[in-house]
Image (cartoon, rainbow, N blue to C red):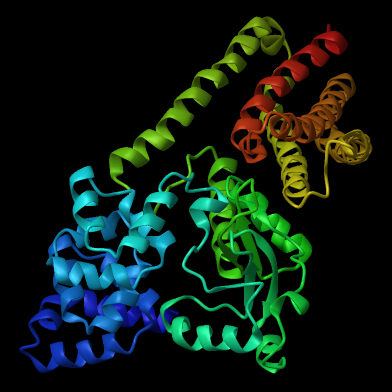
Amino acid sequence: MLKVKKILFQIENNIDAVLSGDSILGLDLWNILLQQHNADIAMLLLRLDINRQEALLKKFPQDIAFKVFRKIPAPLQAELIVLVDLDYAAAIMKNMPADELTDLFDHLSDEDLEKYLKLLQAKQRHQIISLLNFNPHSAGGRMNSNVFTLQKDFSVKKSIELLQRIGPHRDVLPQIFITSKDNVLVGHITLDRLVLSKPETPLASIIDKNVLHVYVDEDQEDVANQMHHYGVLYAPVVDKQKHFLGVITADDVFEIIKEEGSEDVYRMFGLVPIEYSYFATSIWRLVWQRGRWLIGLLVLQSVSSIILSHYGSMLNQYTIIAVFLTMLIGTGGNAGSQSATTVIRGLTTKEITRRNAQKVLLRELTVGALIASALATVAFARVYASCRDLLGSIAIVTSLFFIVVTSMLLGSIIPMILERFDIDPAHSAAPFLSTIMDILGVLIYCFVCSKILG
C-alpha cells in the first residue's frame, strides 16, 4: 500500500503533465496509472480539483473510466456526470447497477434527475424510481434489483436457454432465486445444480427453500446481522406480500459492516458520522458536526465547577484532596469506558440482550467491586507514601472505590437504556460517559471526603 501511495503522490504532483501527455514523464506516469487498481485511481481522483477530475475521467479508456466512476462517492459522481456530454453520461449510467444509480440520483437536482432518467431504458428507469422511495439505509436502498431470476414452472432446459440469452445483461449469482408467475418468491437453486440436472426436470421439483428472506424496509444493520447469523451469502428482499424485489449480497454486508463500524467509532468519540468521504465533506460541516458536541459537553462539564465551589472550604483545608482529584476522576472515566465498550460490543453481536441484562449488570458489579478493591489497595499505598495522612488516605481510596464501581455500572446501564429506546448504544461511550463520570466522580469524591474528614 505504501508503494501505491508513493506512485499516486508522484502522479498527483505531475497531473498536468499526465493529462497533456506532451512529455516523457507524463506518458510514463500515465501508463503506470493505467495499471493501478480502480479503487486507487478513485483515491487519486478525490485529491484533484473538479476540472482535473473531469479531464482525467475523459482521458481514461471507457472500461476503466466506468469502473473508477463507480468507486468514487455519490456526491462527486453527481458533480462529474453533469460535466460530461449526454452520450458519455448515458454510457456510464448503463454500466451501473440500479442501487448505485439510486445513490447518484439522490444528489442530483430535480432538473438534472429528470434529464438523466430519460437517458435510461424504461425498465431500468422504473427500477430507479421504485428504489428512490426506500430509505438508503434499508434493505430496499441497498438491494440490487437487476438480478437474473427464474419461474418455478420452467424446465431445466428452458432455464439454461434463458440464462444463456439474458444472463450477460443481468447479474447472475451462483444462487438463482425462483419465483411464481406473480413474482412471489418460492425458493432458490444453485447454478451448478441447475446445470447438472436433467433437461426435462421441472424447477419446482429441485428448488431449495430459502434459509432467510428480508423485508424491503428492514434496517441494513439488522439484515447484515441476520446474514451473518445464518451464514448465507445472498438474502432475497421481498415486500409484505413476498414479491421478489432484489438481493443483498455478501459484498453488500461487507460495506454495511464497514459503514456501521465507522459510525460507531465516530459516535463513541462524540462525532456525527461523516456521510461520505473526509475530503468530500466541507470544512464548515466538519466544524458544525464536532463543535456542537464539544460545546454541549463544555456546558455540562461546568457542573463540576459548581460542585467544587460548594465544597471550597473543605478543599482549602485539606489540600490532599485537590492533589489526587485528577487521579480519581481519570481512573473512573477509564473504568466506565471499558465497561461501556464491552457492553456495546455485546449488544452489537446480540450476545447481550434485554433478557440477560440483569445478569450482565450483576456480573459487571462483581467485576467492578473486585477491580475497585485492587485499585484502592494500590492507591492507598501511593497516597499514604506521599502524605503520611492515614485519615486522608482512607477518604481518598474509599472515594476511588465508589467512583470505579459507579462508573462501571453506568458504563453498563447507559448503553442498555439507549438500546431500549432504539438509540445507537455507541453514543454512550467517550466523551459522553467521561463527562458524566467527571461530574459524578467529583460529587462522590467531595461527598465521601466531607463525611470522613468532616
